[in-house]
Amino acid sequence: MLSYDPFSPEVIEDPYPHYRRLRDQAPAYYAEAYDTWFLSRFSDVWNAGSDRKSFTATRGVAPAQVMLGETVGMQPSIAVMDPAAHTEMRALIADHFKPGRVASLEAPIREMTRDCLEGLASRGAGDVVAELASHVTVRVSCRLLGMPIEDADYLVDLVTRFFTRADEPQGTSDDGTEAYQKMLDYLTEFSRRRRGADGAWSDVCQAFRAAEPGSSLSDEHMASHLFLLVTGATETLPRVFAKLVYRLWEHPEQRAEVASSPALIPDAIQETLRYDMPTQMLGRRLARDLELHGQRMRAGQGILFLYASANRDEREFPDPDRFDIHRRAPRIASFGSGIHMCIGSHVARLEARVMLEELLARFPEYEIDTEHIVPLRSEMHHGFAVVPIHV
Image (cartoon, rainbow, N blue to C red; front, top):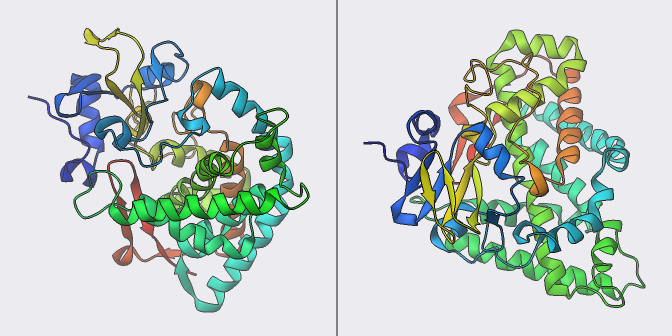
């Protein structure tokens, strides 16, 4: 009998065989222990993102929130809003994340990347995550949000602690909860400090302040919105980039192609986002009864969208377990779909492109120290926490 539990050690170690069985045998799988459904096929996950009537985000979207009723991270933000409130709030900041505005970040991203690579060159080795990808992404986040660059490493530490699970993960750890509260305290104080600075706010923060005409968001409410943007900007892309660097090393013929033809870099990024999406799942609550694949789902139950499974669905992707930079999949589930599609996707793609351009231009035959890779494992994330590189 098919059994699936995202908290089980065997699923956390390697979820992909379990995803295949779910897609084939139970595309709408019910876990009674959590009163939660799991969707594993691409079309179901993709279509769910645009279904405004059947699902609600207001009771949480993270796996632990949906399955366990965890309240950590449940402060108001666009992640846990439904239309029309979500639509209005997202519209306030959307312009700042469009390709034209994002393009202005390319020069500082390239400068930061070159500085990081200079440090790697001087040492001959380093960690792709901490000493390149995380270093760059958190500083880009600070630039977008107007936060002090000197606080960047402190923010990365808090974000990492928040997402790191205990040895037997069942949601946010005690240390992660403490890091979350410290992050909120920091962001609340940041909002309070900037509020008294004669209106000298960053564009994104200023846009949020326009949420209530004639007034402004409270510092605590501002902090919850900023928390979402900081964590989204500094956690996922470094994991994607680490896998991008690893997969190209693992497939040296494809790496050589990309190094000699940088125009292939966006294709390599797209394939890595499909093949190795670190965020395994996010979800909602059912807002109404729904029938899917012969299963009757009841209003109030949890439902989780298995993005990583959707990206390996052979119904959408031929030979899905093969890494191929020439695949050029027209759509992937990695940034979500519909109204909650990742607002920072253009920033993430730009960061990955520039960092890989610079890495391959300087060190096209880098080596990976596989013995000292540190895996990142939880019910929510799968990937690498540390990837040692020799240059």
